[in-house]
Amino acid sequence: MSMNEVDVLLVGAGAMSATLGALLRELEPSMRIAMVERLDDVALESTSGWNNAGTGHAAYCELNYTPRKLNGSVDCTKAYNINASFEVSLQFWSHLVRSGALPAPETFINPVPHLSFVWGDANITFLRDRFAELSRHPQFAGMEFSDDPAVLKQWIPLVMEGRNPGEKVAATRIMRGTDVNFGSLARSLVGYLQSGPDFELHLGQTVEGLYRMPDGRWRVLLRSTRGFAVREFAARFVFLGGGGGALPLLQKSGIPEAAGYGGFPVSGQWLVCRKPEVVRRHLAKVYGKASIGAPPMSVPHLDTRIIDGEHALLFGPFAGFTTSFLKQGSWLDLLKSVRLDNLLPMIQVGLSNFSLLRYLISEVTQSFDDRINSLRDYFPGVNPDDWELAIAGQRVQIIKNEPGKGGRLEFGTEAVASQDGSLAALLGASPGASVSVKAMLEVLERCFPQQMQSPAWQQSIRHMVPSWGQSLTDDPVLLQQVRQAAMSTLKLDRYEKNPAAPVPAVDLVEA
Image (cartoon, rainbow, N blue to C red):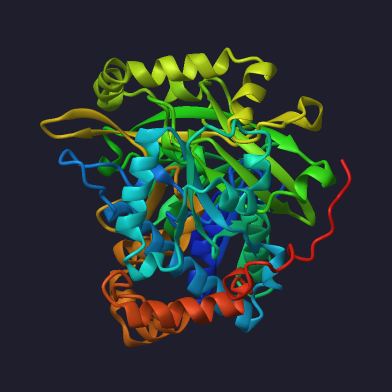
């Protein structure tokens, strides 16, 4: 059996691997890159447009990114960081659009206003305090607040129609929000890689083993999902970007840095409406407050989606629990991931997160009518016949062992890399693909440190991402420059220029 020799092997054909591949192609066109995927096409798991919320996570509407501090003030640190990270993604995507590597931006990203919506005195007070803190920062310039029902009827008519006139409600709005079809984006990125030399895409391949070779390279053994055909790769660098499947592969590598990591899988479902007369009356992503004990990806929201030429509304997600790490995975995934080094942290997380477990059980046992009743909080006039239940993507939250603290459940993303930088994996979920460019640049910093410090790579990175190495949070002039350029290239400035602009010119598809 012959061994394919490559510089980089990307495991998983989702947004993260596609982004890393595109960055490397831009930085080092002669690099030999291979991508392997166990399914029969790219971007079919969490990256698929119907498997995620499509929210370009910029912290405009996600209330869980701005918790209250013990002193009662609102902590906006995470919101500033996530917003700046999304701006990095916009810069890179706009660079690829200008160079012709990506198609017309409306095929993968469209402007959709982002709103936060709450009811009740305590929540309205929190939203007002959040608005006061965020709106004075340049990153959140243009944010509006209103508790006037007449104004909210203009912003979100479906949300306000049929609501009790005496109910106290409030919302914030930013017009430059986005809806991103990450599936389309990933497919286009892979298409860009395929258009050049020295790239191979291998579908229907499962990683059976990862072995360190005496020369420091990795021997990766693949097996076809259609039979017993075996293929081998020798790679100088391996990236494990298979979403929920990254943890088992990281454990297979045997690197010491993988010790102590575990995974907590969370499944999800959406209510979906494709009825044109309903869909065309709502142009927004409207986020509310999460239930007590709910994981961050389960914050309820009513979203406009534009996926492969179809407009739809999604509401949810409704969380659930399975033992599978992937939507098309095995119920044995969780059991197989338990090792001696992560057993205690996983037990500690289980014992300290009863509220989360109770929440997941309550979500799993909900009926369709229960879910429709939840939707009524955001769409009082809902007709259940217009909606159907759909399965969302699978998410695996990070469990890690912190010295002196024990097992801890993390609700973010984290890159784990070997000491020599020859292998890296990305674990976790939200904000996920929205910050893929910054996450992958950080992987390059850890795993290609010499190249990243070279004048050639530094020049290329600043050409692709002009703000790289600088703080968008601390430099409002730079923020304004890169934001305006990216939004113009990606055609995202239509609503900031004219809030009454029509819905993007994508045909509504009949249900």
